Amino acid sequence: MRPVLGAQNPRIAELRRLIGRRSSRWDDIVIEGPRTVGEALDAGYQPSVVIVPEHAEDDAAVVAVERRLPASAEFLLVRDHVFERLAPSTTPQPMLAIVARPAASLPAAPSVVLVLAGVGDPGNLGTLVRAADAVAADAVVVVDGADPWGPKAVRASAGSMLRVPIVQYDQLSDAVDALRDAGVTVVGTDVTGGEPFDQGVLDRPVAIVMGSEPHGLDRDVDLDAWAHIAMPGRTESLNVAMAGTLLLYEACRS
Image 1: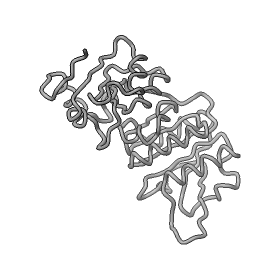
Image 2 (image 1 turned 120 degrees about the horizontal axis):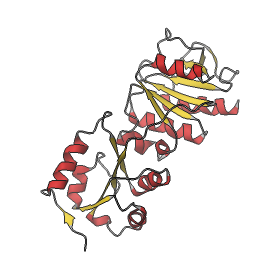
Image 3 (image 1 turned 45 degrees about the vertical axis):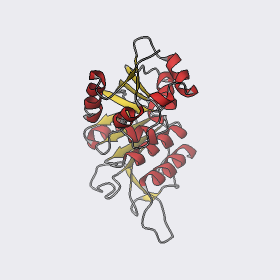
Image 4 (image 1 turned 180 degrees about the horizontal axis):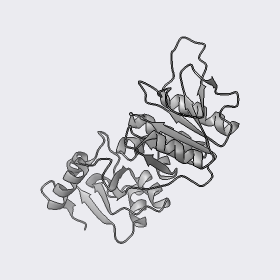
């Protein structure tokens, strides 16, 4: 019978400190739930540690993932209240796994790329990565904003974060230069300025640049073109995740 670890176990105390200090500079990431861990395994990521609450030991989804784990993975069964303290979310799914932070670079000749410059809400970021996955975008570029590998962003992406290359840059100008070098037209988004989004401005190959939720993009940024979504109704703007999804589908349609 596998031992069930409590809060006083030295290994649990160590993991609590590590997960609690997790940041965008940490070499590992925490993913949550048997489905997401299974998708990580499908994508070739091998967890170093897997943690399961006592009540879920015999759960079919948990058992299925456990059978797929490499021999090198450390599998820990813990008390339910210990698991709740370890988990980053308030309503955790019954599995946590620690994997190496994925790294990616721009493809050589991308067709559609989504650039998120300062998107601060991890839920919006994860939803946009999911939309990019849905249209088979070649990559998502992240500059500043929320950590794409934070638990909330990974959860909102519903596994897409593990399938779409996530490329990070410190400066938007560096990302724009790299995209231009790859032969891509870089199009910024604005609430009212620029060309209508459905009039050819998003013809491929294209990179769609979305700005932060409260401020959008600075119009002084050096981009190739600008696009907007006409809103004849009374609202002033769309949620960044809604707008980005609409623009991605238009880029793929064109």
